[in-house]
Each structure stands twice: as structure tokens, then as C-alpha cells.
Figure (cartoon, rainbow, N blue to C red):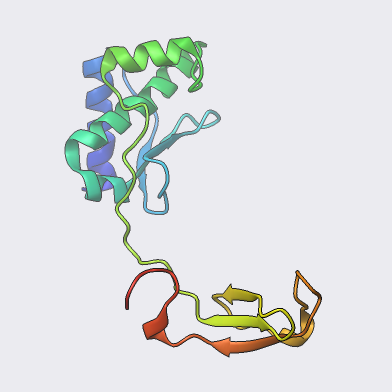
Length: 162
């Protein structure tokens, strides 16, 4: 799906569920991850997460579009368009929009710890993803010197095997 098809979809949903035309721009934004869409109060444009569309499909995306259109139409009508407003909650329930979007599936595994700083005095360990210079730091418990060592990939301490 491209931006032109999304624009037509948003316009159709607006007329079908709100009986008011959508007269601004709706586009995909590939950088949105934690939110399904955004409504901009100054330009009145809507951005939709392409990743959510690819991960959850047509039905979930229509709920996200309804959510953003609730913001849009209430803002233009000078109603309560924010998430906490009763007008917004009522309209969202009426049109069947999503209150929250589904989270994206984990696409990339979290980076594992690669380095261990060990205190030479009290043996306290600090795990790090990036290499650090132990001469610049001291133990937070006893102020002792730190020693740097790398962690082999098989002994990854995040709880996942490589």
C-alpha cells in the first residue's frame, strides 16, 4: 500500500463512520514504532505507522485510522480531542476505534552484554554493552579499581542463547 491508497482509505473511513470528509493529508511514516499513528494539531495531517500495517493487517489499521480521525474531527469541531477527554472516549467507542494499538513484534533481539568490569577489591561486577576504559571509573561500592574483561558469546548474560 502506498500513500495515495492510504489517503483514499482515510477519506472513505471518515465519510463512512463520521459522515464528515477528511480534507487534509494522510501519509505513512516508517519510523513510528511505539504508536500506530499521529495527528498534528497545527497542520491537521495524519501519519500512520507502516510497520503496524505490515505486522497487524487491515482490521487493526482501520481501528488506528478511526482513532486518529477522532482526534482530527473533534479538534476541528473544537471538542475535547485529547485522550483523557470524555468527548474523545465517547466518539472512539461509538465508531469502534482502538484506544491503544497492539505492540509490534520483536524484530531485533536485544544486544547482549559484551564486557564485564570487575572490582579488584570487592569483586562487584558491572556489565556493559560497550567497551569502557576502566581507568576512568571506580567501583561504586568500595571505590576500588576496575578490571575489564570481555564476555564470550556462548556465556551471554541476558538469558538468551546465541
